[in-house]
Amino acid sequence: MRTQVGIIGAGPAGLMLSHLLARYDIDSVVLEARSREYVEARVRAGVLEQGTVDLLDETGVGKRMHDEGLVHEGIELRFDRASHRIPFPELTGGRSIMLYGQQEVVKDLIAARLAAGGDVRFDVSDVRIDKFDSAEPVLSFQEGHSSNRVELHCDFVAGCDGFHGVSRESIPRSEFTEYHREYPFGWLGILAAVAPSADEVTYTYTDRGFALMSLRSPQISRLYLQVDPDDDIANWPDRRIWDELHTRLAIDSEWSLTEGPVLEKGITAMRSFVLEPLRYGRLFLAGDAAHIVPPTGAKGMNLAISDVAVLADAVAHWYDTGSSTGLDDYSTTALRRVWRAQHFSWWMTSMLHRFPDDDPYQRQLQLSQLHYTVASQAASASLAENYVGLLRG
Ligand code: RFL
Ligand code: PHB
Image (cartoon, rainbow, N blue to C red):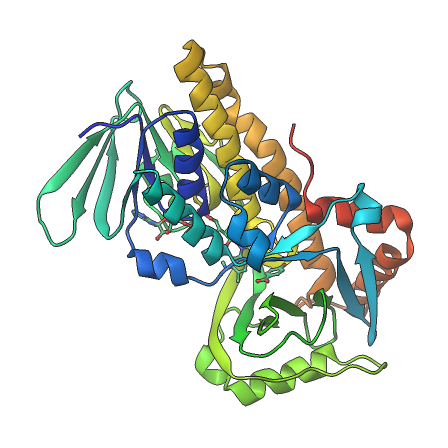
């Protein structure tokens, strides 16, 4: 079998890349280890930057997002039992964010690829990449229950297979620099069948740790608590989760948290990670395969989408002109945005969480930073500009 671009992974990065390439009449095959049902149900990110929304719109996959997603024009920061709003449009020249679940974006992209005759293969196993340092890399894999290996010859391979995928692992370590930071906490996230208790995404700093209120729809809330990264979800019956949320989210004015049935819950570790460069021969890495941010800045899915926007243009330029300038610049161009998001996500995380070795001095620094962020127009504008996402280019 042959295609122009072999793509590993049907998350936001892989699907969007396939969709963007198709708009340039470039063929691709997407290989996904999980089933379609699984990837369409995987609850993860919820905040889309303005640039992500615009790209989905421009490429014809924004309809359901506009029907069902919720435009938000700010976020709240809570600390010292008071709530403060950061308004986005007036601080960013009219920009805002969209709340729309990642799995909805994934559903829309899968539907668009299949409707356009795209080749997306679910339930493949044991994907291997060979000859990626030659002009014709080869992907091989098994399909369904068959024990035969299928070979897919490509011009390029895109590793869009997330943090635990095979792409990054296939590359000789000596070729790369890795940057990491592990955080001494995780997030316990729940999805609950109850109307959100706040109108906007609310980030809360307390002595007991961080809490976040978000939402997926007028009937579905998404809430998070900072917990020990090694904690077991079995230690968190629903009653304990709600009690802790009530305590951390409390403010001195009239407000209360409404409870509802918990539909889903889990604990995620938090880390920052970047691999440089994003290319090895004809293998290009994009999204979580190459970099991870802690979710506090809501950047992960947005970075996955912006990586593949750059990559699709570079690949198209190569087919169009034979020039490899775009491909040669891919890593540097994508990493400039990645490092900005790394800094922003690390900064939000450091300001809003309790660290086990915090001393009283550290706590006063965090509070000072929070007061400054909500009181100063310049500081609020900096948060807002990073949160809605920097303009491309
Ligand atoms: P994905 O989504 O992990 O997709 C990778 C795909 O590759 C498949 N795969 C393989 N396929 C074939 N062979 C193999 N060997 C394979 N190994 C893996 C996987 O099954 C999967 O389908 O990576 P991608 O496309 O780079 O997208 C990245 C985003 O998923 C991620 O950055 C975000 O979810 C992060 N994130 C958030 N991002 C935001 O932009 N805004 C948010 O509000 C936000 N909140 C979050 C988040 C992530 C969270 N968790 C659970 C990590 C909140 C949470 C709690
Ligand atoms: C979410 O809605 O899941 C969400 C919102 C904001 C974040 C992270 C996750 O920073």
